Image 1 (cartoon, each protein chain N blue to C red):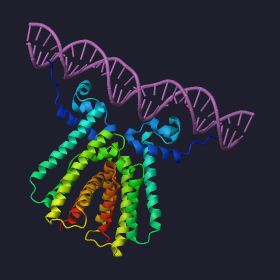
Image 2: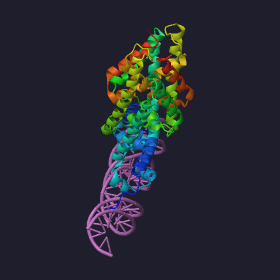
Image 3: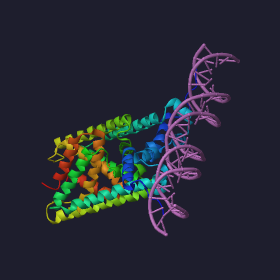
Length: 192
Length: 192
DNA sequence: ACAAATCTGAAATGTATGTTTTAGATTAAT
DNA sequence: ATTAATCTAAAACATACATTTCAGATTTGT
């Protein structure tokens, strides 16, 4: 008996995400958001909710998107080691050629300790990536593609830590060579 | 012929820094700040300036403080390698036992691309740390305390990248063991 | 075609924001 | 002691903010 929502919610969330990505949670105003989403604030409040709920939706989308992407990549794995180096190179490419820096990292540092809901989502994302990479590292060790004294867990944490560091480095120095060298060195530590 | 400033500017800056540290630049309001600094906003505007100038002062203080600290440490260096492992362990202790996460990293991700003044300060800080550590790595290589295929530059960038990653890891997982293991593994890669 | 439902747009809400003004208190030099 | 400077405190400022209201447009099932 009733009218349907006019705007494409998924696309609107996508636009909102881009605003948060650029300005951060506190830096983005509702006007910035509704303008980018091209909807009126009443529509936003009637469908998605307030600013915080909108942000949670954006982060959820971002996080789930990354999980899907990772799963898709994993299907065409030849060797575990190649999958790992593939992930590392993907990370390098994202850092060097995408406009924004990782939304998950940015949000982690902005909302640490102040927003439990969002932090829970980020933890979920982090743990997924961790498990995903851990699985690859374990397989690579089993198949003797990787030779290492450290356990798979440590190697996994180590690789992920480096990703974060590269993001910061590139924000500050904007030096692609630096990132590429670090990636090369990281890879050289378990495959040569 | 005139009255002097009543409040201790250094202490006030310190208090303001703590607020920014907790809430970020956009998250901290002038009322949060003046309340913590225990001064009236008119005094603040008459002496230090507006919110942005206050923030620049805070970051400058933070950054210079770190530089002094590093220089102080360096005076009592026995071996370059020990100085390096000392820095790594200091970083671990800061992550595990200090209340706030690194203000420089937090700010880098919050204000990347939106605040050139602050970014310049952070770049200065980053380059100081880089040169400081690079110098130690070079000496350690000369003195054959470190054996590595990679150049000193890469090793240096690599260590610093890990610091950032550990911060993020600890915010998300709050797992001290994880950080300690990564530090141990990092150290093991050039000294065994 | 009707009627109930609910979405949309513009304006209004109240609060919080960063900043400025004002008046008076305090100080230092003469 | 007087004068000139300038600091302090409280209140006032305008603007920006997140959010709500309301009237009217639109759509769906009957």
